[in-house]
Length: 238
Image (cartoon, rainbow, N blue to C red; front, side, top):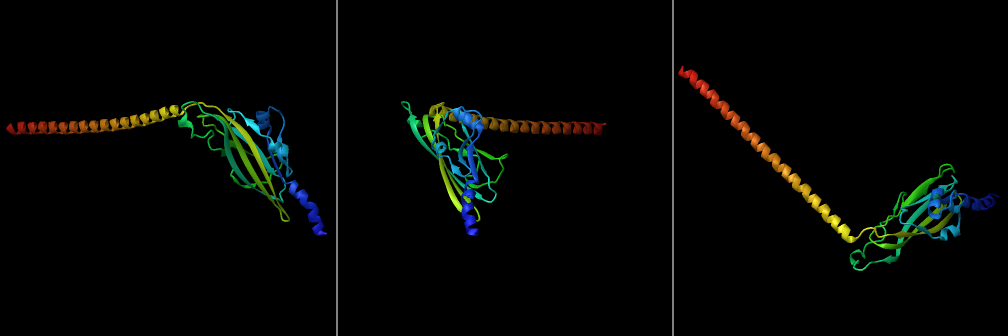
């Protein structure tokens, strides 16, 4: 009887354990749809249509927001996140060999640990996190960003895995050139050299001031000694 109960409960436990979705503000930003959430995983069931859809991310959008929650306190959800970037349709202008080796995107940044456990929470307090995709600005083109999410669901009686690969097509524009960066680098070096020269000049001025102060003190002492000696000599002469 106990074994039969376990077999009956296994599907229920595996399904009612994890939600992973786009919040309303992200859906509106990416798709222009208001008051809607987009679920990749709901009650442990993968939405293949949502997962397979490659959303386009415009240059002005740099943050991808996600929400997940473990909905069953009896099941531990362990996750593993892997991020990958593939460049395509990259446009290089004539004489741009200096920028050819530069990546289209900076390294993606994530506000969450890449490995860990999704905390159990109720529906009123889901856990939100984000991925930051910043273009370098040196080249124009598109990059495919893939986020590979591996979930391991563990309970006292069962264990199961869920894997999803979510892709985004990030568009980047050329906003500055290698020459601009080189000029900026030279300017920074010039500023640093100027600061060093100013510090050196300030140190020299301080040393010179200290020297003149010392000379003035010594001169004052000599004058005082001469005056004392003169007064003493006059008194003796009387």
